[in-house]
Image (cartoon, rainbow, N blue to C red):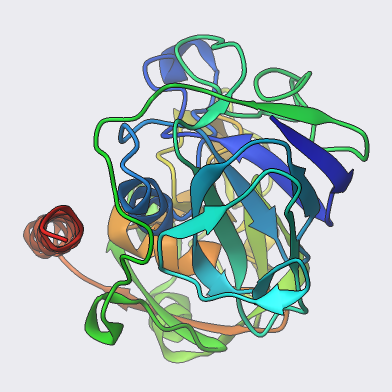
Length: 325
């Protein structure tokens, strides 16, 4: 059992996500940085879909009421146990009565805290993930609050020894500038050729409107190709007849401030989507924070699948490394 002494800025319970309900308008939610989430669970021997805490910008203060193992991955929000600094990306022992806290954010935007056995809350639609807009999952569909109690589950597959630490070459480093690879479409033909080129040339800035629903970016206005308003679409040139949005879709309402839709976003709508961030780079985007800089790179579907294959291979390497210790 874990007592929440301080909740942090926005700490939620997340797992792999609520998969299989997108067609009825239910976004998957789940960990935004799936890579860091997966590594956190591996370091404590958890089932790949065990629930963890996703910590954004400012960490919580947690009092553990039982002995267990934990691991902390993702962006750099330096952790402490009983006010003593402890490493990230390492299997850590924590004893009953110990207090886990965090220092100020140094890099990235989100940290993942796994506990051996996972965080135990009821499953809703096959997931424990918190979806705050609909108030489902996690604890009453909300971020943690002071005074909450977290229970530890039994989703543990392997026994991992205390002190297993990933080597530097298997740890992701974060900066304030990010390159995101995208697959163009479904409606990139709606943007003028000049604006399409500028979309990839300029450096975009993450605005304060960046959360689990989406990231709004600031750069310059882009122009759309004139067209006759189709039946069922709005009059603005960025409007189309309603379409389903893949996670990572980039829409540009009225040609200003692109929005990248993420795990808690609406599943469909009437804005043209000019491209989709590939799944591997959604992990990168999850670690971008306000005022960070982004650039987009266009790649093919084949290249995107190769990147995903390489990312999965890296996870397998980490699993192999952890299990042999």
